[in-house]
Image (cartoon, rainbow, N blue to C red; front, side, top):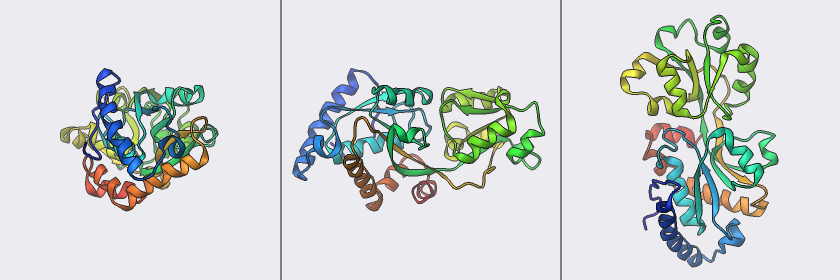
Length: 278
């Protein structure tokens, strides 16, 4: 079984067969390294891992997060039960105890009561808007001057303190349109349901064709640095020592360039390096 194998995961019986095969290989690797997965990583039973539609990070069973999951399974010796969820459903599921871990998650004070975080990337969220408007509408303040304009966001996604605060203050709830997924967000832009959207910059290159990118432009409307994103580990499942062990695995993947290698499978090397070295 190849390490870092790209996982095309569906929540079907096919997934269970694939996981069983990988689990045998991963357990043997863990034993060879003197690890006790249940003790060291909190996986006496399969870890229920939430993944979300997130462009080149996770789409249709593949992406950077899928590859990271595969690598973490190998290095830890744990078995993962992969579950596709929508952003808005993630934190209620963690609170209810039906999800143990999630990828591409952003910490907030409220979420930190439910989970500990191990970050591995930083995402720069940017406005995506009609190219013809760039130069006249290039900031959140300028959007206020266009009362007919609506901005699309993903329900349950956090864009960082700057955007989360200013969008509500500047635009109000009636000018914010919430969509279920990143794919829905870009479709709303494409069809004119909204006039602008806010999304991680890498999604611009994933969801829009070259022809569409000529019509829409990325606009950096925030002075804030990239927003840290990574694993969320439920406090009800993992103790602090186990979270530290997951952190060591991620840091090992950073130091030996595995994160760079996995990210570069799906995005440009320059973008991968920027995300990892945020």
